[in-house]
Image 1: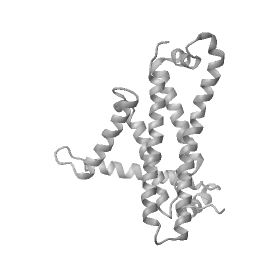
Image 2: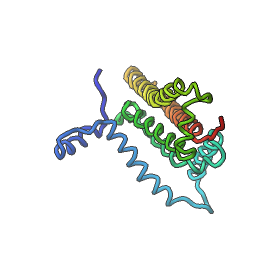
Image 3: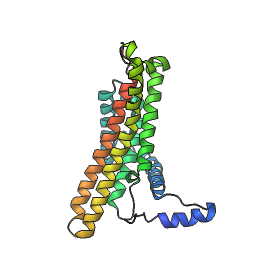
Image 4: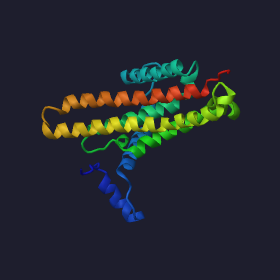
Amino acid sequence: MKHETSILYHPVNALWNHAFGFDIPDHVIMALLVLLICSTVFPLLTRRLSKDNPSTAQHFLEMIVAGLKDLLDDIIGHGAGERYLYFIGAFAVFIFLSNIFGLFFFLQPPTSNPNTTFALSLTAFLYYNVQGIRAQGVGHYVKHFMGPIWWLAPLMFPIEVIGHLARILSLGMRLFGNIFGEHMATGIFMGMVPFLVPWPMMGLGIFGALLQTFVFIMMTSVYIGGAVTIEEH
């Protein structure tokens, strides 16, 4: 099956290859485009924010931020909304915009490539472990991997380590599989009946983009909560 590329792939690589002698993968170009959009649009939006006369768009954004804070407080604990908002919010924006790229025939969603999704899942894995160590200390955090009974530690430790490493696979494969499948199905149906399918499929695509974003940030929040919670055995 022929691999589709975005409209930017050939012009970008024509310049890059001429200068450096190798191509940039399409998913990297699309990921950089998401970062460029975020670093351009959000600073411009902040200039239009007003405490005295907020716009409808500002109310909508404030509602999303408040929802993320409440989600973090509910899953991790009181105060987590302020502490982890920037990390989880960055994940949410990047993943959602990446997923939305699948609705445009001239773009490719970065999250339909496993390199992107596993980079995200590995980042989440490293982050929640670092936060767990910061919250509990190295010794107490490692103790959680050994189980509640000391003589079971030789058995529990490798099982716990494998279980945590499996989270990288779970997060990455879930996001990749769903976005890749939705993008492929949309392309097939649009090719068969282009005048009837696009609008319903776009609605389904937006719902799928939201759902997969929510699942990723919710699971990451659960992992952070499990890492930073101090339990007495």
